[in-house]
Length: 317
Image (cartoon, rainbow, N blue to C red; front, side, top):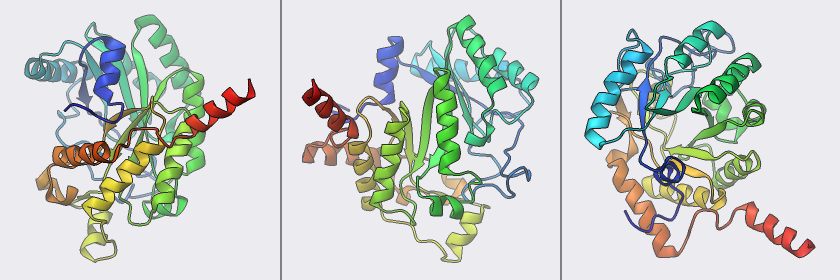
C-alpha cells in the first residue's frame, strides 16, 4: 500500500538489510515465572497454554530443524533469503544459562541476520546479556528483545495478572539498552480499563526509553483462558473497532517517528478464539487506519515530545 503514514517494519528492514526480511518462528518447551509460581500462578488472563504461539512447529524439534523447515517454506513462498530467528512462545530467557547459550548458538547460520527473543522484563539477567553481547560481536547477528509492556496503566496490569509492573519494564529496557540491543515493545490498545491518556502515556514512556520497535494489537479472547471465562460471564466488555482504530492513530501520533511499527493489529486462528478483531480481517482494519490517517493528514510522531525537545534545543543555540 502506498502513502503509509508510519514507519513500517518492512521499511526498517529494507533500510537496514537492503531487502525484505522474514521471521522464522521457534517454539521451545518452556514456561514463564507467572505460571510456575516464581511470581504468580495461572499466567496472564489472555495467555493460552500455547504461550502466545499458535501455528508453530512442535517444540520437540531442534532449533536448527525448525529454522531449516520454516526457511524452506517461507523462503520459497516469499522469495526471501534473509531471516530473523524468532523465539516466540512464553519467556525465552527463563532457562538455565547453558541451555540458553545452546539455543542461541543454533541460530548462527548464514541466512540469519537477527534474533528476536520474546520474554518478560523480570527475566532479563546480566549473564545472558553478557553472552549475547559476545555472540553478537562474533557473528554480526542483531539481537532484539520483545517485551510485553501491554499498557502503562498499573491497574490494568493488575487485572491482566501480569505479575510485573511498569517499573520492571523500565528497568529491563534500560539494562537491554545499555548493551546496545534493540527492544520491541508489545502493547494492547483495546483494554477496556484504559483510556486515551493511558495510550498517550504508553507512547511517551517508550519514547523516553528510546524503544525502537512496537507491536500493537487488540485484545482477543482465546478459548480456555481466564479472559474467556470473564468474557462469557460478561465481566469484560470489548471496545468497538472504531475506538480501537482511534487508539492506534492516537498512539502513532505520539510515538517517535523513527520507531518501527511491526504491526497495527494482531491476529489469532478463528478456531482458537471466541472473540478476535470484531470478526474483521486484520488487513482490513490496518488499511482503514491508514486511510483514516491519510484523509486527516496525520503522520507518525506529529505529536511526539521529540518535536518539542528539538524546538527547545534550537532556540537555546
